[in-house]
Image 1: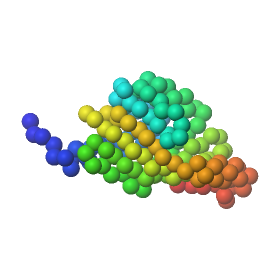
Image 2: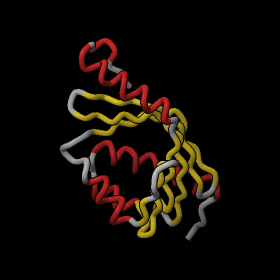
Image 3: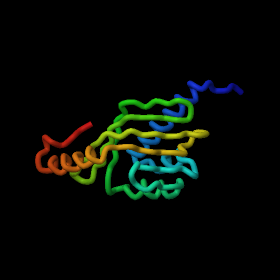
Image 4: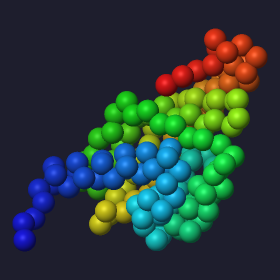
Length: 145
């Protein structure tokens, strides 16, 4: 049995996070659950933290058929068990598309995400809502990845 070097382990952790967020975009809830630790903490900074895989999975499953999620990675880097990413997220509800910048911090242990913390600017998010509403009436204003 060979041991992984820290660089290889970090690369694997970055891939786990990317796989997780892509599974969220694909609404692959079995994959989402398989990548979350039992005691995961999910936090959108400024909002209450959700604790536990079952609660996080229930929240994610609640979007099925109601909204879509898209992600575009700008950076996804790891050092040890910590993965940091800059990305653009889009939440799509019917014709309303809200697209905004997010910085994510993840902790990965033994191949499972133990912490998922997202930071985003509430002013930027509010602008995304306004632009999304305007994009319904004026399609040229609708953001795209």
